[in-house]
Length: 190
Image: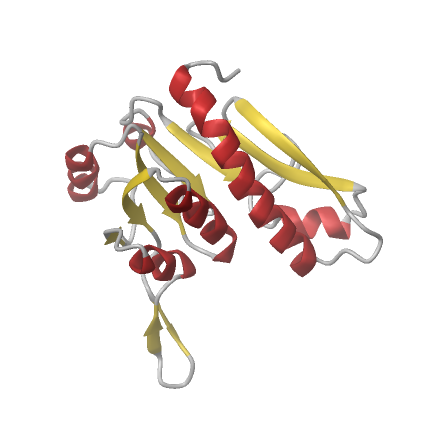
């Protein structure tokens, strides 16, 4: 299955790594533009870009994906069968959602529909949840909308922090992705 991976922060890195380790054909990575950091305003690559470069995967960093015909043409040329999104940082427009044969799936760090949107990990800890998890969903046009395909539940300890839960959910999302992709490809995903 030919994949385009869209992600930006550390949360997305285990999923990209898992795809490469499992032997999936990751044709391209799309991530946010490099950002200036520190006093010298040195441009630093995103964590996902660093992972992609280690695997010799072509990287694209458009300022925006919405209303960007040049980027849409690039995606059409790549012709992915599926686009995997993990904390990319932009809402994906309809013309991209409908481009791949299997559409776009999102790896979201909560048990949807609870905690849609930004900061789901921190909010679950703040709210004192007993469990959290990861949901893989077929993406719709809105923010974290679309049919849920698979979930994994992760118990939270009483000492849980946003940082400790972040690592657990990032790894759980990667594992869930590798378990879920075959059912999407075979047409058996519910």
